Length: 153
Image (cartoon, rainbow, N blue to C red):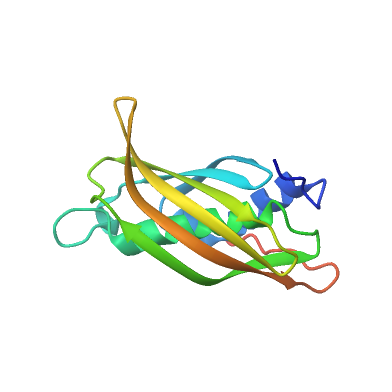
């Protein structure tokens, strides 16, 4: 179990998520968070599909990337934001269900870089099928005192 550096991490992560207009555009919701872990949900939408009718891999990758970043943010210091510096995504099955659960978690928390993983699962009839997995390095970036994310939603 990880110990957060910011006692108000939950409010800060939720504010950062709300400020990311991409999440709203991609129909991604933040369901839950705890130190070093977030759970999000993607909803299939007709404007997020590739030519064969599956959810576009870029949309799924964006969800995995955000899950890694927000998991890292739960453990960052109050004056720190996060930025992905590298990631690798492996796809195992196309998304054919209406909802996808994405779980991001920190594997190793560092002061400058955290190593994270995220997994995407289809949600259908209480059955979870692994769709994709990401490994990610997330940089901790110091922000000026008093900086707050803008709410662009």
